[in-house]
Each structure stands twice: as structure tokens, then as C-alpha cells.
Image (tube, rainbow, N blue to C red):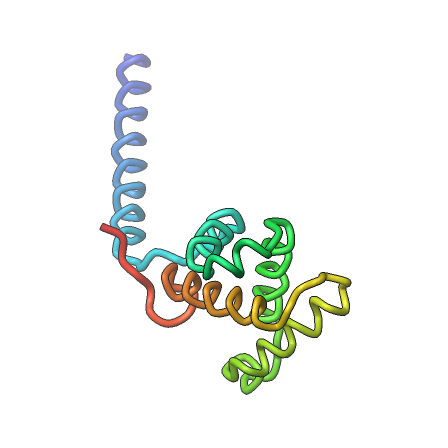
Length: 133
């Protein structure tokens, strides 16, 4: 009799837990996928989008550092005009890179910035979120 009570309790517990897990799974499946910025993925995308002459002059470590700096500027800039104005973003990124002793030209920074913004739009971090099939 005790074994039957234990078995029934376990079965009821399993059914209730499965119901909760199923409900939460359905709820999460209807929510849009959140964008995730991955450094390596961003670097590969940006390298592919850069013009050949810019890509040939850009060191991979420098590229990754510029991507980190740009993302931090986007995240932690408190002035919305500064984020929305591409020329201000370009100037800030270039100045910061030069202050960190990164040897880079302004056209190179401009090309990297444009490609990085394309990547951010593609993953849904800027603008609407792309749905995955």
C-alpha cells in the first residue's frame, strides 16, 4: 500500500512538473529572439564586409579592439544625439583609438564602423529583430 501511494505521488508530481515546463516552453517560444553580440562572429562579418585595401591594412587584434570600443560607446553613451549621429560616433571612435595608441587611419575606422553597424542591424541589436527560421 505504501509503495502504491509513493508511486501515485511521483506520477502526480511528474505530471504537474511536465505541465509547468510545457507552459513555460510555450510562453518562451512566442517571444522574439534576443540579439547576442559575439566578438568572433562580429569580427568575421566585419572582415568580410571591409574593402580589400582596408582589410589588408587592418590587424585582426586591432579590429577586435575597435569593435569592443565601438560597442562600449554604443552601450554607455548617455547622449542620444551622439549615438544617432554617425559622424560624431566616427570621430569619437577615432579619437579614442588614437588615445589608446592604436595606429589606424580615419578611413579605416569609417569602414569598420559602417560594417559593424551592418552587423548590429543584422543580428537585431539595432532596429527590428530578425526572426530565425
